[in-house]
Image (tube, rainbow, N blue to C red; front, side, top):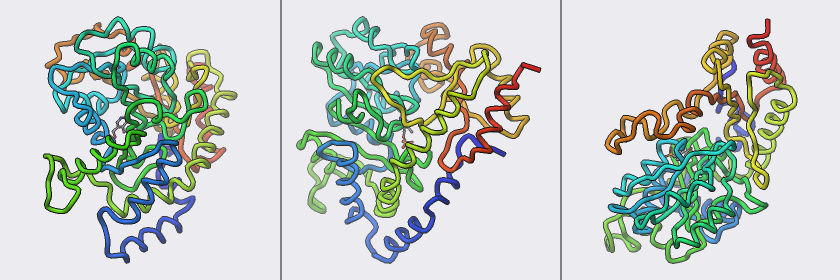
Length: 366
Ligand SMILES: *Cc1c(COP(=O)(O)O)cnc(C)c1O
């Protein structure tokens, strides 16, 4: 069975290093907010090229706490792409703000030429989601934000270390949000997240908020939350980070091979926006007709695939209260019916790739 993602493989590449670090943290007797978290925060900030990093408990926390600390909530509108992951939208709505959807372009990310027409007197921010490992057009987004005085939050959960015009994503907006969910580029062994920012004051607010609103124990300045990255995850993430460039490189190699060897007119390979590079969090093809038949065909050959994502947020039951209906965002709806994520993971063998490619190339061509 070839799985869409195989975390055991990536783990196996450096198992001894993870085991050693896990024992080190266990033996230390210190499990929350200690030297592993501090070191990881510094190393992640350096890697991304931001001044400050604050470790949090998850990617969703990174998002909603960002909007909370930017004072964006009830009565405010936030622009987000209509094909986003549901967590992006929850990050906006947890504080009571309203998501305003903008359709994606051929690169599967927000179509920046459609943003301005959605701006109203209530618009406060743009959430730039760098989906599948590919950057949004941050030149356009930042100039629109400047023109209308909007905040920009970047959701980099799927984009650990890729670039827009040679600058790492997460460094353009007010805040860059990261998830270290196990399947993400730099994945933890449990839940974890972080924010990066160049704004010192804002970074301090995150530090206070994640720890019950306190800087000094039992002196609570504000009503905060418990969203601490723990020592075990931080320690293991430091090991992961030390290999992140090689992981990203390896997935690029797998993607290159898909590009050169998948040859089936029914399948559209992912398009990369000029100026962006991809870390290939997912390799998402579009199959405008017969997507489900292709997934079934692959499954019959023991090859797993995933759909990111089958239901666009505006049609999700959770957002019925927004009052949207089918047909309101036709591009996102079309994408939900035609996207398919092919297996891509560190440690994927050439043999496995060959099988995926052959099986795809044989689809409906007998
Ligand atoms: C994974 C993900 C999140 C949420 O991260 P969690 O750590 O699971 O809370 C948010 N946005 C995007 C784009 C994601 O892929």
